[in-house]
Amino acid sequence: MPAAVSLRSDFTAAALRRLAAASRHARQSRRLLSLAAVLDGMSRDAAARIGGMDRQTLRDWVHRFNEHGPDGLMDVRGKGHAPRLSADQIAAFATIVETGPDPIVDGVVRWRRIDLKRVIEERFGVVYHERTIGKLLKQIGFSHISARPHHPAQDERVVEMYKKTSQRR
Image (cartoon, rainbow, N blue to C red):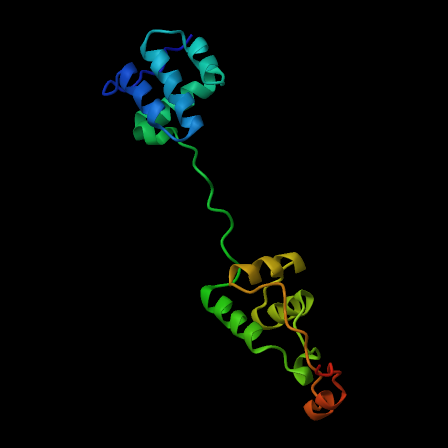
């Protein structure tokens, strides 16, 4: 059986327990408590059970602790995919949405997500799903609620003439 990986010697079991009590991250606390149990002389298998893991996982956390200290026991979140539109393209897209469609060029009087999907494909060469367009709009600060569009040939005088008004009492 191979020898166990040794722990750093600059932390005591009591110091690890104090760090675990002060931590706001439950998983880091469990890992610190498991390492404190190892420093107290508990078997690696029993110490791993304290933290809710198996012996191999504890060994991996020992390596992370030795390399990075207590901060190495925190979960590392992935960065996700790189955005498909650059910052300049997103700014241009925001301008397109803000100015609204041209009925002659775009063929619509107000933007829908499917229309914006087509515009992004044509102008930037990036294909998004219709649902992702909604997420992108929310990300750049637009609401899904929009004002009711006006017909381009609508005459405001005729609209005012046919408005119903209540009689004054």
